[in-house]
Amino acid sequence: NIEHLRSMKVWVSHLLHLTVLGMVSAGPACDVTLGGIFQMRRSPAGLQREAATRAAFCAFFPNCTDTEYLAFNLPSPSLGSLYKIQATDMENMLNVTYYLFSESSEDSNSGLSAAISAVIRLLMNLGVVGFVGPNSSSTSRAVSPVAEVFGVPHISYASTSNGLSDSNSFPNFFRTVPQDDGQALVMVRFALRMGWTTLSVINTLDSYGANGAAALRESAVQNEIRLATRQEFFPGETKDFEIDSRLMSVRDTNVRVIVLFMAQSDAVRVLQRARTIGMTGRGWVWLTSDAFTGVDVSAFGIQELARGIIGFEPRSSFENREFLAFNKSWGSSWNIRGGIITNFQNHSNSNFYVNLPPAASPRNYSAFGANYDTLVPFAYDAMTTLLAAVRSLAKKNVTPCMSQLMEYRAQLRMEMKNMTVNGTTGQISFDSNQDRIGAGYEILNHDGISWQTIATFAPNTQVDFSSPFNDQNSPVWPSGLVGVSNAPPDLVVSAPNPYEYRSYRVAYPVLAAVVFVGVVVCSIFVYRHRDDYVFKAAAQSLVQVMNL
Image (tube, rainbow, N blue to C red; front, side, top):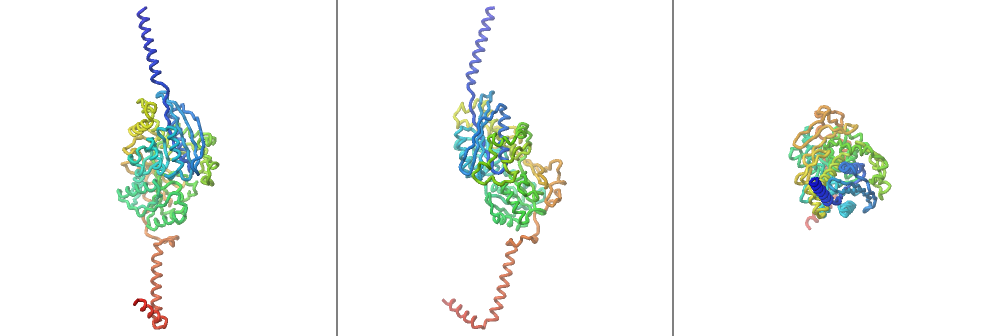
């Protein structure tokens, strides 16, 4: 049939035309480059957070492959490793590369870290359009101005300082972890639930500690809680007398409920010194911020004083199968093979990683299974959010190949700001300052053996005890008593203390008494010898001096 053949010819021609058009429009896949910044320091936590972002990347792109690994030196005493993972998104015609950077140095938590600045510029040279990290609030403050110059959005999984809640000053900064004012509020609400109306605060003079303590003060005022004193010291302080003087100032207020807002290592140091001067155990309550909460206290030799500590951390329901499987497959060979150097003791130029407790040493940390760091789920969600924004733009035909790099970075930032992602820590969306909206907290209590999650707290709610815990069987207090009704008093009447000789509260009255007795004795002596030649001569000399 001639008509049938003609129609078939037209149909085949049309089909070939569509195929050719599809091939032309699809073209080659567009390259998208992402980055990640992680600080190892003295804890396996950095390793776990790195692993979380790798797991999130490979969950998004199951065809991901490990391609390159490079170890290199940074400004001394730092050491770095760069790890490259690649994947192809066939549906959206993207070749996605993830450069994961690990850095180890004593000053990696400092806002002035030369190593971090070097890393940022390295990532920019690689054409990164967005990156996950960094860790600390101080480092995020230092990184953000550099990121702003290049127009690169970055999303932190651990920077909680309220000082970063300003999209005008930090326009490219996002975070999946809630900011410190939420943590301060739950601390205050917990205090009220325990019947406390007076607290003391000790914090470090860095972005995390200072801003956290400031948020606590504001929340305390709003909830009619009095802060008896606020003591501060510089992070990394090693002089015993510097820490002891702050502790004694707190002790002299007679307040027995103390809040610590500082990094893990500083909190450990304070608790060790508090034990030395008798400020732990029965009658003392320590509330710790998320940087310390959940730490393995036995690794730092403070197991015996941990009972009764109350800790606070961001809430998450992390049950991601890909990540848990990734964790369980972790072996000692990955310490080097994975491009994530955990054997820093053999590479570092300093003694920073020498003589660490086994549980705190990355070198001996061969597997972590389901026992992950508190902020690991937030690192996973940071990568998920970044990838979701990239994919969302691709579906709108917006890629780095369709626009200038700076323009694409700006579009990526706006996409992140306006989107909502269902993450492992709950629904992720951002407010006008690009802070996480609606994140809750968990309240943990160390019962002398381990940390237990005893309660939860969400915005605009009260403290809610979590089954099987209730206000009758928790918290466990340092005395061994349990329950809200047995909460130690927040304020006590001054009592003799074996270390009281070091307190000015006693020194001033004693000194005054000594001076008074001395004056009386001298007056009696002078009166009795007023007619002696020596005193008469002295009196005449005094009169002459007064007449001059």
